[in-house]
Amino acid sequence: MTGPLDRKRFTLIVGILIIAVALLIIYLSWVFVNVIIFSIFCAFILRPLDKKLRKITRIKNRQITAVLTITIVALIFIGVFLNIIFILGSELSKFEPDALQTDINMLIDYGMELIGKYIPDTIQENMKSNLSSSASSAILFIVNNVQRVVLNFISNIAIFAMQLGVVVFLLYYLLIDGENIVETFIDILPSNRVEIVREFLQHLNGIYNSLFNVYLVVCVLTGIIGGIGLMFLGVPYPIMWGAVIAVLALLPIVGPGTFYVPAAIYYYIVDEPVTAIVIVIFGWLFLETIPGNIIRPRLMMQHGNIHPIITLLSFTAPLFVVGAMGIIIGPAAYGFMLAIYRTYTGFEVITESGNQEIEEKAGAQAEDENQPGDEIQSEDKTQSEGKTQPEDKTQ
Image 1 (tube, helix red, strand yellow):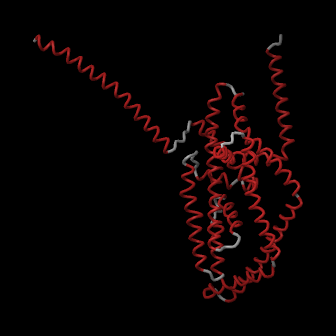
Image 2 (cartoon, rainbow, N blue to C red; image 1 turned 60 degrees about the vertical axis):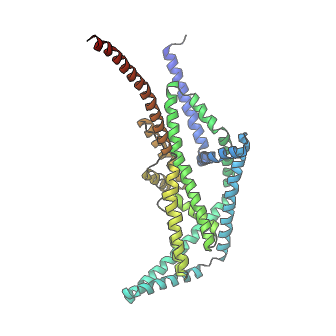
Image 3 (cartoon, one colour; image 1 turned 135 degrees about the vertical axis):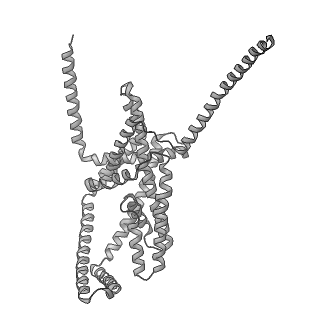
């Protein structure tokens, strides 16, 4: 028979072996860590669409609905991406740095005319030369960066295609078996820890719905509204600018104002003040006020309410640390810690409909409790009256 010491030694060896193999797997998969994180993120945000397709089409086979979900999203993104590539290609082919420099010099002269009454001529000349040289440096910087990005993309297109294939593959199986994976993980937990883990996962699901699904849905709606509005206003390339607005709306500090304010300034400079005013009003009302103050709060009330500070930090700070993947990793990390906090403190998010249901249930319970009490009181009264009446007669 093996003694306690042998069992502890065996457990220690097995634990060290498991940790070593886990670290080896992480090391071997580290090249695709961004792909894995992106696949899990896509599976989470596409899960509502997958469920909606199952409900609309009444197809019970998850493999078919997963393929439909991936196909629909892929076609939309490929269409937008090709549109942007076509526009950039056509515009870059017409791009002339000298002509752009001339336009910028004209803009500088126009600005100097506006403030010329308040600044001496010598200072104006220095300002014009400094601004012109700064504009030339900025143009060269932008052109070099664009060329570097395009060449880098072309040289790594095979790697991007392979990563995209892995993303589609993982996304397909996560849509099919994602819920089963979670249930399998819960099944292997100790029985006294299942309830708290389920509570944690409920908090995590609500928080991630607010940080990812609701936030992204509002950003996409903002981009769609912006594209439609720009199309009616006659602004060229509305699909591309709608995609740009959606990306800008995703960044809390930047926002859609980064687009519509410069656009309004441009149309004012080219002697179209009416269009400039309409763009400002449209941008402020339909790209800032309605999505931020009406659509997003109503959608977030149905899920876990998130403080604006957490939203700002989770989407902004990680961008300066890990780059573009910070948009996914940041909210995931902040949301995970917030779910742990809410689980530990017993925090409970109740919607307005939930409050009404609770009040109705409480009222019904109170009525049920009062009715037996009233009957008991009436019975007590009748019994007491019956007892007192004979005593009065005897007196």
